[in-house]
Length: 84
Image (cartoon, rainbow, N blue to C red):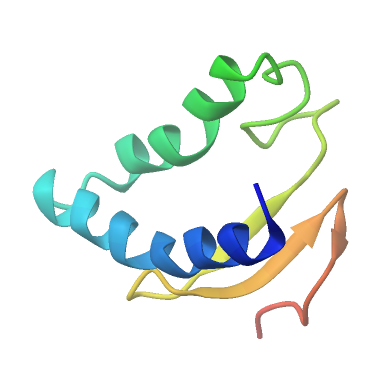
């Protein structure tokens, strides 16, 4: 996947997440699994990706109330400014 395509996919994620949350009456926990745990499992990365737990990579995205990304952590370090 090219960098441009990956950026386009990421730009569409907030809308996709919001649509899923609306579809499942606000079931954010189910959507979180669809967006993190399930892809990690399918890709064979669930030993260190897909959840916040000891021994995992600590990659995460902080979302606002509208499910837009506001901060990113990669490998346990803030890649963007931490949320205030």
